[in-house]
Length: 306
Ligand SMILES: Nc1nc2c(ncn2[C@@H]2O[C@H](COP(=O)(O)OP(=O)(O)OP(=O)(O)O)[C@@H](O)[C@H]2O)c(=O)[nH]1
Ligand SMILES: [Mg+2]
Image (cartoon, rainbow, N blue to C red; front, top):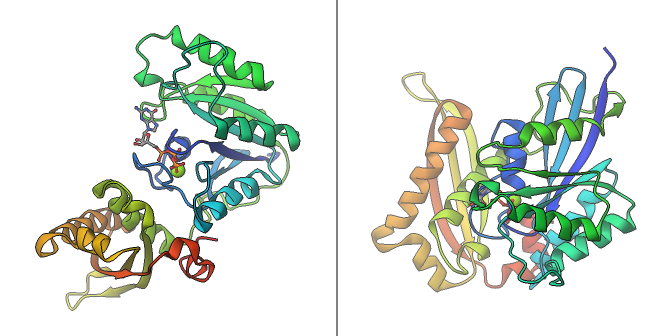
C-alpha cells in the first residue's frame, strides 16, 4: 500500500467553528468548543488516518486584533500553523451579512488571505454553519465575495454541526495528500498530552458557564493527574486543578454562592473526564487570582500558552 499524507491548517476568525469542524472531521472531540470567541488558545493537531491516507489537521486560535500578550501569542500560533503545511482551510460563517456588494470582508479575514498569498498556500474556503441559513441563495453572494479576494481551490458550504457537506470537503482535502510515509501511528488522533486535554475540558466548562470578560481571563493549571486503584480495586483518575483568574471579583463569580458555580463546573468536567478515560474520576478545583497574567510572559509560559 502506497502511503500518502498532507498537513492542513484550519484558520479563520474567532468563533466561526474551526474546532467544531476539526472534531467533526476526526469523528472525535479533540479540541474544546464554546460559543465564546477565542476558545482555542494554541495550535492543536488532529490526525485522521484512513487506509493509505493520513491527513494531519492543525486547528488554530481565531485570528483577531490583539489586546494583550496572550492575544499576540495566539495570533503568532496562527502564523506558525500556516508554516510547512500543504494547504489551508479558511473557515468563514454563512451568517456573515454583507449589506452592499462593495462592503469589505472582516479585517481579520483580509489579513489571513494576505498571509495565504504571501506564503503561496493553496486553500479551500469553507462556509460553515449553513444550517443557520434561511435562504440557500444567500450563499451565492458570500461565495462571490470571497472568490474576488482569492483563488480558492474549492469552496465548500457545510455545517460542522450536522455534518452536511463534510464528505465533499474530505474528498477535496484528499487531493492534497501526496505520496509520503505517515508521520503518525495509525491510531494517533492528536499531539495533545492527556494532561493538557483534561485542563482544556475544565476550561471548556468555565467558558460555557461564565459570561462577559470572566472566562477570557482564565487559565487552568493542572496540578495533579494520576490514575490509581480504589480500595475496591476499581481504577480512578484523580484530578486537582487551580483555576487562575485576573481579579478578586472574578474569583467570587467563579466560586459562586456557597461554592455552587465551582461545584457545577467540577461536576460537568468530571463527566467529560470519565467519558474520555472510561473510568471514574475525582475532580478538585481551586481558584487563585494572578493579576494581569495575560500580559505576563512568565505566567503565560507556566500555563503552556506560548
Ligand atoms: N449552528 C451552528 N453552530 C456551529 C457550527 N459549527 C460550530 N458552531 C458553533 O459555533 C461556536 C463556535 O465554535 P468553535 O468550534 O469553538 O469555533 P472556533 O472557530 O474554533 O472558535 P475559536 O477557537 O474561538 O477561534 C460554538 O457554539 C459551536 O457550537 C455549525 O455548523 N452550525
Ligand atoms: Mg477553536
